[in-house]
Image (cartoon, rainbow, N blue to C red):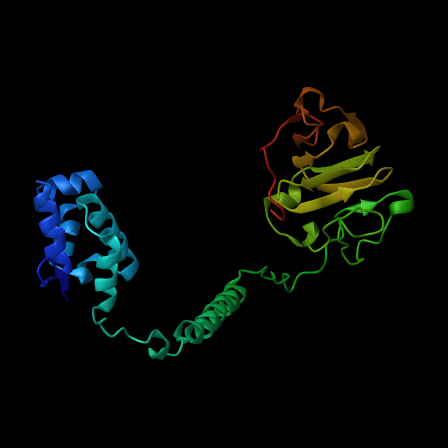
Length: 288
């Protein structure tokens, strides 16, 4: 696009800006320094490469400042720029828009179901493989013991009464009556000396008694005020959870554990038929 200048010569926007700059004796870089812009901006204006400057608002702004800096008419140059054919701009309202994808949400539910299924399968496998208590069968062909533990006074019970759970029975006392009768056993133990142990409880205490034949004569949590008597092959192994609360008599003679009682009140005793007491093993296995 050109405009009338001098004797009718038509000059374009770029030519007018270049001529005005040269009349002032400025190079392209000097003009760019005065305007504080990149020299490529002024070069684009002089070569009328307006597309390199971006939107119209930027082109008009650079054009106005450059014209004022070199003494050209900013208004005339703006009119010349407005008369230029504008390139067709795309209609952004007609740009096809794709449908939003729901692949993420469609995959989320199956993944969640898979995780829940794996968790349920793992829980089922754990329940099926959980180790449980196995029942131990009672010995067959042997009559119940008659020389085992028997109660005295108000706590007395027949020797052939069913065994009670020491933690759930009303009296809180337990005695193991499912052992074989000592009189039915053959061997050297039938001639070994027998010892009778009397126990009186001034307070609740755990007690476990076994004889030299490794028979469990008594075990369980005995309540306060109860008494127990057991008879077995000497020496007897006695474990007391609260030794100061238990009075012991062996064959009618009082027995004092003394220094064998631990700081926590427990005691592990080995008592012979003569009433001599010594330290036993630290722990007595149930049923041995």
